Image (tube, rainbow over all chains, first blue to last red):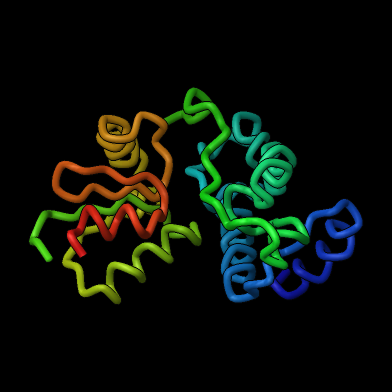
Length: 110
Length: 84
């Protein structure tokens, strides 16, 4: 699968749930390419903005879309990676604030 | 601008990391960087241990500028630490 296909597959489904791709398409495709790379590397689409442990069970919370996306988009209008954002974030109706890591450091095996 | 040692801990896949690296390059800052995901397991563990000494959460990107540490691509804080 290439990033364009992944984008086209994900977009309508995620938008129906209220999650939009960042309007910065270059960044989006960079992240989708990274997700595909992680799929090749680890066998699962680990978040490209976090260090994967190479253990699917341990990383199930950071398989994209991660479990932190919902509270992060609710609070900041964006996920940790700025891949998925709210409509208001894309329309710059809310500030593009730094999204702090919500995952517990204990989850990392490193 | 001062000439403090600048070290960037990053992931090769992370967009914030790439943006920060690009920012440093465009700002003509001399720096060294490590792509932690590209390291061998043993080296990765040692590097993460070193990173946690300056950023206990071990999140990326993390940049060390002299004695100052900035977690995440926070341009204003990084510019200030760089004396720019």
